[in-house]
Structure formats: structure tokens, C-alpha cells
Length: 316
Image (tube, rainbow, N blue to C red; front, side, top):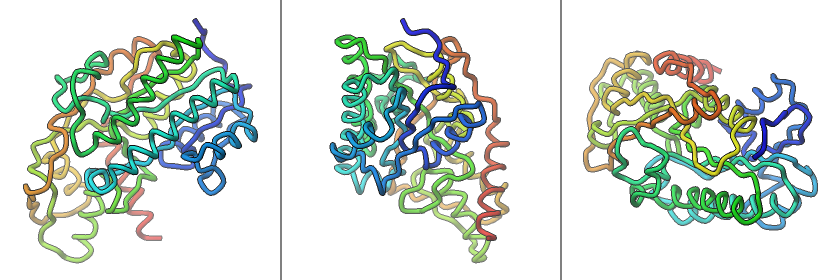
């Protein structure tokens, strides 16, 4: 079994390295003295295209791949693009891993998603429950496309002795998040709604669902640290949760965001819109046991930092 990797002298490719999570991870790696980091940009490398993937391996000659690139969005985006979310995510991952094997890459770090879990997973979600049912319908195509990377990881390890690991982070949030209402996740979407309402002197905001669903969130810098530690220290076939173990209802979430954003109006629930998965909260003990990872940023502190960042960006 592979020992801890010294990443300092490795050539590392981070797909999605220019994105929200990727930019935080790349900064962290540079701060830790890693010099050879290659970030493929979509304009040059469309990773859905097989020739583009081969070109990436020729150009970067990676020893380690950290695959963060994904086509993602909130419930609305998932409902509108199930085919695209399935195909693009599946093709990127499958081809990147196959080419990694063919090119003798030492380690492949595949980023899965909380959406891999069945709709009615017992809370807190344990890694061994990941195959116990079908994912929540609105994001199943995305979740299943990502989950195939777990199958591929384990199959390649079994047949080829290929060192690939699979991480499942909960929803991320933090400075630099995507605030576009068409594709954003719940925290940036709600922050934007509150700020817009304050700016336009609106007396109410409308929020999807009933507010009863629960979610767990991890601050982006914590997630980057978890991925870094797993890349360095974890070399087993079993999937690993990356989260905080902290569960909050959407109702409490919007109350907190409204307070921190200065929105004092009414919150109206549109129950004709879906809640998504009923509950989400992870058992995070395995990540701590296997590679010493524990999230550090408390939720309210992370929210404040995100809101401060958004306020600054808006005022530019």
C-alpha cells in the first residue's frame, strides 16, 4: 500500500483549479511549497472531449491528478439540465481516469458529491450506506455520474493496482462562490436575494420549498484542506465523506442569512417548489481517523466571511 506522498516535488494537475474550490486548493498547495501545479482552462482543454484529455496528459505530464472539474448547480439547474449534467460529468471523469492509468499516473483523486447518497439515507450519512438506494430525483443524474467514478476507482484498483481515491464533500460555501441565480447553490442564492431585497426596499423574499429540509455545509477553505490531506495521506478504495457534521434546516439558514445581511422583511415559502433531499448530514469520523481531517471554521463565522466578501464585490 502506498505511503504518505511528499507532494512538494510532484507534477500535479488540478482540473477545475480556476474554479471556486479549485482556486482555494491551488493557493493552499502553493502556500505549502508545491511548485508544479498545472490548471487546465476550459478554453484550451474541454475535458468532455477525448482528444482534449489526451492533449492535457501530453502537455502537463502529471504524476498526480486532482479532479475537481464538474458541471454543477442548484435544484433548478439540475432539473433543467439532467442530460448535460450526466454526460459531461461522466465523460470528464471516466476519460481522465483511463488516461491517468494509461499514462502511469501515481495517484488520482476523484471528487464525488453528497448527491451520490440515496434520497432516504439514515442520518448521519455513513460511507457504507452510499449504495442503499436511488439518489434524490432532482440531482440523481449528476450524483450517479459522479458515483461511477467510485466504481471506476475501485475496479481500476482491483484490476490494475491503480491508486485512485474518492471523496464526497457536502455543499460548499465561502468567498468566491457562484452567485448567479440561474446556477447557484442555496447559500449564495439566499445571500443575493437578501441583498437585492434590501437594495430595492422590498418587503418580502420568496424562498423555494417548505424550509423543513436540512443541509450540511463546509467552508471552502476547510474542504481544500481535506482534499490536500487526503491526497497526501489516504490510499484506500473506500469512499470518504468530507464535511462538518453540522446540520441546519433551510428555515434556520435563511433566518441567519437575513439577519447577517440586514434584511428585516418577510420570508415567504413557495411550497410548490421542491425541497430536494429531505435531510443531509454526514458522519465525518472516517476522514479524521484516516487522514486527520476536521473542519475548523464554525458555520456563522464562515457565513459572515462569505457575506462580507459579497458585499465588497457588489460595491466594486
